[in-house]
Image (cartoon, rainbow, N blue to C red):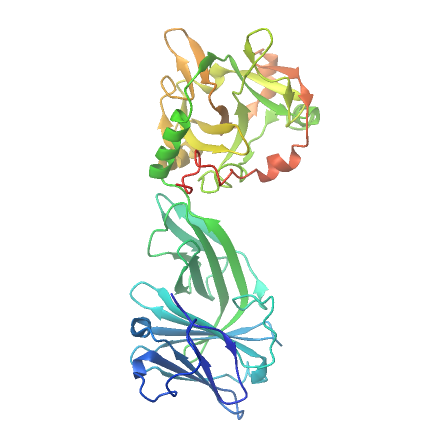
Length: 458
């Protein structure tokens, strides 16, 4: 992207925006220069003296790619932002008459200028100028920020399509999508309640969305009164997830031991609430942001987490640990409850925090809403033959790989009261250590510097 240097407007009418690294000395404004290398923008507000902005770049290709000009004019005395969208490919001179409804003292204006290439909506040039030469630029945002905030939804369709959903359908939205890894910016606009991006987003890349919302004015002008912002990481596709699954299966030599139950640790009050207020039903909840930040599960699917982690005890047997950071009461449910012909098993994540590596598996009821979600996005595993947790048909026993800590997200509510009454589950006590509330609610992101479980490192 051709980034123009930002300088403050001088007292004269003309303000030059130079390319980074280029001296302000050089050829006079239009003497000996190709006109294709200069965009001239003239702002006029009522009877006030005009302000002229000359935008130039020694890179001729940047100017040739500049098809559309977008101006965002913010006035520090108001929350509104005036925007102008104009085609300037053939004529690089743009006269902007500021509407009376927006007009104030021009010295209060900050002008953000974007040059867009139409064929792919890429922002090829970007610059900012303050019309007040005494404006303090310290600790300042790179985009207009005095408008009110609003929220919108980002929707994902596998493998890599994304769309935005707005709460209103009768307003105009200017959308800036920045690829933070590649330092590229794209511009789109819509007047509907939904907008689908015309290109797929690259998996596991970091993006930033900035959306301006407002109303149309005559002559290609818009008034925006609110801004929505969102930083996000594009989800993994099945391709990346397969690579992650292979790493989880091979990073250490497998060591399988038998396991009879999966368990869930919570404070005693958690289970008391289920028995006294929930009719014995343990309700599923939204999966948090723990694990890989590009996981399709994060804030997208509900479930209940169980653990298959075992420790070798002094007796020589592998049993659940005697302590837990998640609570002093442990619900134990037989393996067969989860692994049966009515359910499906998926690989979802491989991550670490400090030392130990974890694998997340998902168990769904076949053809349920959660199963349909996972079938499109996750890696289906054979419950009788996979490298993490499986049922051996010949011995009628279940085995877990001790090379990795395995956790299971079960995507249905569980009638704990019935299981306990029918002796298909039981409660035990353990020692609670640490505070788990914030860890359970927010989730702990994976260690992004680990070269074993982080595909972005290599």
